[in-house]
Image (tube, rainbow, N blue to C red):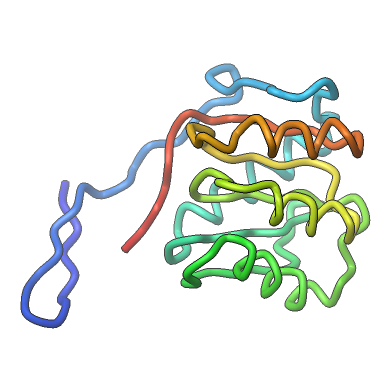
Length: 151
């Protein structure tokens, strides 16, 4: 199945993203594993991020979306927007990201606001720095191995 999108001067054709990752296919990459509550919220946030424009950051808690940031040139800018939309009420919240974190800045920013767990595809040269940021602050991070980056 294909998705079609009109762009200036042409047509963008991409495969329709119909994949639903399963928890047993994912990898916890931090010292701390997500709690059962966090797992549910992470899966929810990641599935929402799949349907949001590129550089999607979805902040969720209790199976509800608190804030979404997307369509920005950088992941940290998307994170800032999501935090603002969540009205800075992130204690115990999680982040689902449609693509990897190339730098730890967005992870650290979210942790400073109260985020406790992250789900992302992984696969960046900067993965280790993002993992270290989580370990330093006792947050959990899960890699899915699959991007959901929409254009």
